[in-house]
Amino acid sequence: MGRVGRAGNMAGSGRGRGLGIAALVVGLLGLGLGIGTAVYANSAYGRGTLSSGSMSPTYTPGQQIVWEKVDGSEVRRGDVVMFTAPGRVTSGGVERVIGVGGDRVACCALVGGEERVTVNGEPIKEPYVSGGDADGVHLSYDVKVPQGRLFLLGDHRADAMDSRFFRADHGGTVPVDAVRGRVTDDRSAAVVLGTALLLGAVLVLTGIGLGIGFVVVRRRKAPPVPPVPWPVQPTQG
Image 1 (tube, one colour):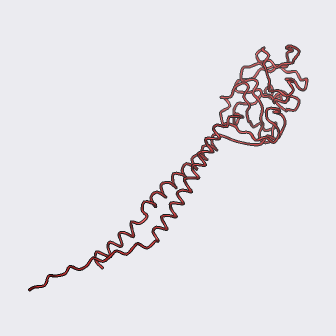
Image 2 (cartoon, one colour; image 1 turned 90 degrees about the vertical axis):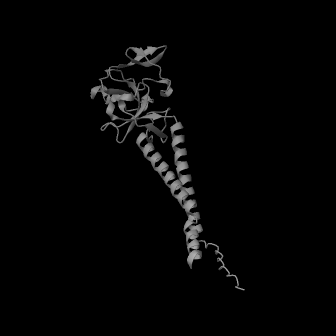
Image 3 (cartoon, one colour; image 1 turned 90 degrees about the horizontal axis):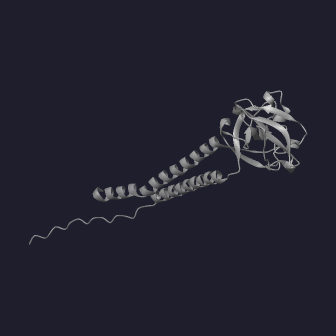
């Protein structure tokens, strides 16, 4: 079979090689992007469904919420946090930070005919509280927040089991390490992560398509190579 056979074998082995390489590269790129995005999203964010009305009207029962997984030392007054506190909440609670370590939180001061919570002697504006009622249950308190702890209140003061009702335990405060995350309404990160996951899926599917094309090309019979004619010897005359 000589040179003709060798040429046919080389053509068969080279068919679709570019498709095969492209399928592998594109598929692995998409898989890596998808897995990396999923791992990052899981490590940086959490999500859950609010089960109580303690944060109404800001967040209502049954509403899906997303929180950034941050250290409790990073939260500030006014932040809404997701936290764990055995003995207070069964799985996780969502409340607003009113006071941080060193603050003095008290209720309530009458300002312009409205009751307001004070922090370090200054009445604070709370446009988020339900019905504009900063008190809710006519329960006075005056708490000095220990360092490394937070004083938390729900936005629906008449329907929240918050720091006001656990004053025997460090004035009702919770340790900063009980914080699991800061609730966010910013959906830009979710859009970016969702786009990255979608792109990863598209790349994986593209890689699969290229792989199928590679298999088809490899199985297709190569066109026959015409035989090289034997040279004709000139006639001796």
